Amino acid sequence: MTGIIQERQQQLAHARHAFAEGGPLPVHLLPPPLLRSWQRSRQAGIAPREAPLLQPRIARPPPPEHPDDRRLARCVQHELDRLWAAFGGRHWTLFCVNAQGWIVAQREHGLTDSPLLRSIQLGRRLRESHLGTTAPSCALADDLPVLVRGNEHYLDHFARTFCLSVPLHRLEGQVLGALDITGNGDRNAALLLDYFRQAALSVENRLMLECRPCHLLALQHDPRWLHTPFQGLLAVEENGRVRAANRIARRLLDLPRRGPLPTLMLEGLFAAANVHQRRRLLQAGAARRVSVSEDRAVYVQYLRPPVPRRGSIAIPEAARQAGQGSLRAQGTRAVHEAMQLHQGNVSAAARRLGISRTTLYRKLQQGD
Image (cartoon, rainbow, N blue to C red; front, side, top):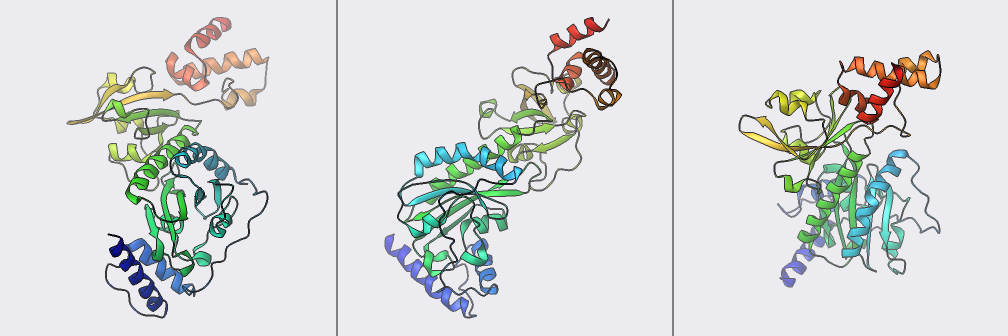
């Protein structure tokens, strides 16, 4: 097996230099994402023998500046820690890049002596035009898990480098970034891919939990998969519109695999369910079996209501603009408006205001 791998690596090295000079590549030599990256690298004028444009290490890497990057870093850090405990080492680094290739989070060995790994750090950008083919650039470009091993890189400098990346997705389904492991040596790629795919799902689930203005629902065909990285998640606005669905939920409900969702209402999504099942979709409790079609059902569990920003009652805009009377009077007015909006449905009104049913009853009594 070792001889076969070495032979393939030699074939790749020879083919890469011939390709850089304008020659064709042998059929099926590279997976399509890597072939496209080689083509982009050649079009950018990069030669395999060139040194990569690696940025020098700095003493204190800057923290992410954009709020989206800070959110991504916060959601990915736990998974980086878990992956590092299993696969980290002196000759390896784990990191997360945003959609533009900027490193927003990282785990590394502080004593590494590898110039390559010491140049990959928080706040640096990994650009294909500077580094040639890398797993993060391919994962971002093609929205696919990518392995780049040895001479599959476009530059000779990375001939001993192992690089595996999986894409991450934002709430609307577009590529948000990529989770990567890079190092000097070799690893069990199939094993790593399983763990990194699961980590990517966990990161995306945490991003869904950050969707504070929405109700959150979990769903799965098998209730044993609820509360795991393999649960489907739906974010539902107060008016019943489905704002976002993670990858698992999209598969379970036959929604578009990528890109923004069409305009969907929660009741329409579960139109095959009976009235009693639909009424309980936004009620707390154990997972409930809900029909999706005549011959298909999922278990749905209500996770949480919309989260008020500061734990206070979400007073409607009309009440805020009025600005008349005491704070107590404004709160009472907000309660009555929420009750009218939801036609006397106490549970729905309480969810809208971000308070419990007991608190809502008390405020109604205070206003009488």
